[in-house]
Length: 472
Ligand code: CTP
Image 1 (spheres, rainbow, N blue to C red):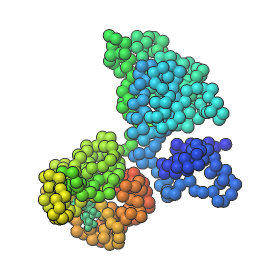
Image 2 (image 1 turned 30 degrees about the vertical axis):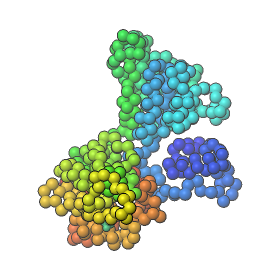
Image 3 (image 1 turned 60 degrees about the horizontal axis):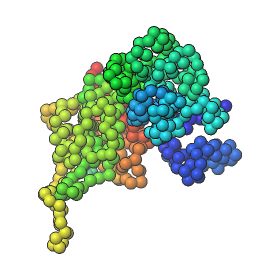
Image 4 (image 1 turned 180 degrees about the horizontal axis):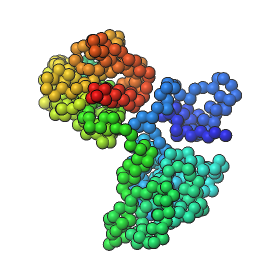
């Protein structure tokens, strides 16, 4: 009988399932059982998601593909760092299910691990709640990687010998997935011949280890090799196992990207803004970085984490954005995904505007610099490939073509941002790529509805093949 892993489903489907489960007062698993039973019983089964994903893109791996990790937390003082590790794994798009050994629970609680992983935490081999369907086998196999942090001397000895007398060791014996161990112990224990033998055996068995590092021990006055590797180091090692470095088609290319809205001050406390979330520009920056580019992202105010490995310049207004863009030149590629405010207040108040009784203050607007047009028309330092976006709410292709002619850029990515599309602030986008043929005719290529991550990856693939074509 096939098994279904809810954690591996599309994010939108998971979100819909959680909502349905909450509405019906059931667990997500029970909700899925009900849906499947209804599907088996008759044709009227409701679709679990209201956001169908086109088949062609459903399983396309992106720079932000979600992997799942079973994290075994062993019993040592370094267990407290495992809580931070959960965060570091999750920020790299890994779902984490935690297993705590009995000794680990002396240092951290299952509740803390559950709260951070947003998943149930497992502690017991003989847990009726999960063992009715061989839970330890699922924990061992329904994941992409097993991380053991901290890996104690005892847990490593048991693994090297093939013991299976508790949940952690049973998982390690039953798995067919890669294992990453982050040892942590007293330096004397680490250097003990027994531990050395066990580590050598584990490495021979194909298990990957990270650390331990040298440094001070928890024990007062002791130092040496035995400190657990830092959570970020472990997360990077996990990522390297799950997503081995890919071909880097943009290695050596400098890419400049603008993203997000701009805020144009009216006075010290008020501003003019727009609804841009910055998600598309940030996704492009992450995809370009994953393709090996040296990326500078100039972002207006957004509620997003800086993409890892990207040089981010935070700005508020269009004029600040232009200044940072100019400072970032020269680059090989520039992608202007920001929703820059077209106008700003002509004379920004230095103090908060007050209700004086003299009526509503008039707001005189003046035009902001057009950053895309400015850079497209540079004589010196113009990036060889300049890409604009066209955000339209009507006559999408005609307006985008007119913008293409007006701005002087090389490509335009046109998207419909009218409220019904949910593009502004949403996770999906439907875009059309406008390019020019050698004879000047405009070519319009319509892409299917995709997530913003997929749009980003596809755009970066197109850029990479353009760079390859033009450099040969
Ligand atoms: N853009 C820019 N600076 C501006 C306005 C827009 O760099 N002051 C860039 C955007 O980042 C985008 C492209 O120009 O790449 C088109 O932006 P859009 O908001 O769609 O069009 P506008 O130029 O503002 O024109 P309109 O408001 O008439 O649609």
